[in-house]
Amino acid sequence: MVSRKIFLNTVEEVKAFVDIITPCPYEIDLISGRFLVDAKSMLGIFSLDISKPVRMDIHTDSCDALLEQLKPYLVEE
Image (cartoon, rainbow, N blue to C red):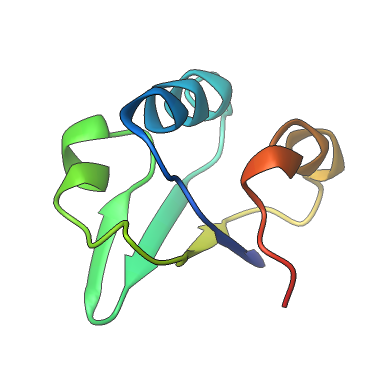
């Protein structure tokens, strides 16, 4: 599993993020506090507090290409 922090600032960014990850064959979760949602669900994402970065858990070990596509949303830790 790979974990990264992401920040989705606008509705357009949420839509673009979901468009990127939807074709992925593995599970991706977003975690904010004690809430966990499917990252492929726009409604799920909007149920989180996205005014601050959230944790993204990618349930695979080989996702370098995906992380490259998600660079605009990644937060440096």
